Amino acid sequence: MHVPTNISTNPSSDKKSPSHLYPANDIPSPPIDTPTSSVPTQIITFTFKESTTIEDPKSPDGKLWSRALDILESSIGFRKLSWGRHVEEAGKVQVHVARNHLNQHYTFLSSPQWASLTSLLNPLYREPDSHPTIIHALLSNFTHNPRTISPDTPVTGTAIYLTTSRSGWERVWALWTTIVPNVKGCLGCTGGWVVEPVDGHDGCYVVYVGWASIEDHDAYHHTKDFGRKRVVLALHNVGWRGYGHVRFLGERVKGNGEREARL
Image (cartoon, rainbow, N blue to C red; front, side, top):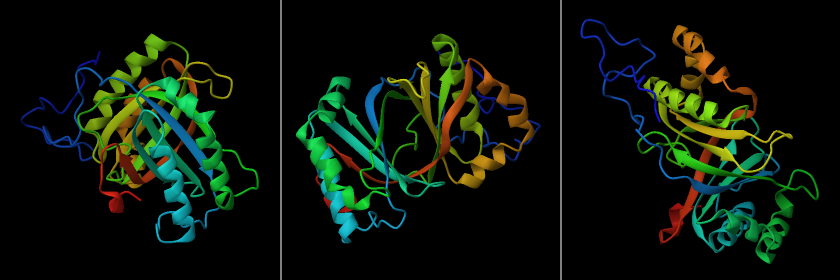
């Protein structure tokens, strides 16, 4: 349940909104009362050579990448995939695959399709015999029509929080998703529980926040507003892993016949 702290809904009529906040009723992705149903999502991170040209579908690298995405798209239970590069480490390529059921993710990882995909991508790996890292998360949207994990998002901030209380953290994240959408440049919030332990920690929660730019994201960290409210994100967790930004560059959706625009 969301705590009603959306400060832009009923602003004071005689004061202008702080410059780092959106004007009243002008939030691109306002909070929703109840998160959407969770979607089992497989998050695969490949470590490729930074020189790979997977963005160009006509290049040798791009053709290999397109074939790999074909394999993912043909897997049982496939619903959607989005992929992009980490901004801070361009060689890291992250793929989000949504399927109908969690067990379909694990079935795929033990299938000949997965073996073929990883072998196919051997020429792109930064290190010989490189292995991708894989986690699974149950992702929900916490704001309306968020631009978080799709190519129409300029950049997405992400982190995995090591939580200490499931119910406590759920209240924290629900509260934060009523705060951050007010910030200029914020385009929406998505998050969910990670199925596997991360660095030996069992209770982990991954978040994705869309931004108009990294500069907008960083600028908020230096405001008095963030200084007052950052305490919220320190509750019910012992830190985070994998903080950074991803630029999603392509997607494929079940039933979408427009292949040329999907990379």
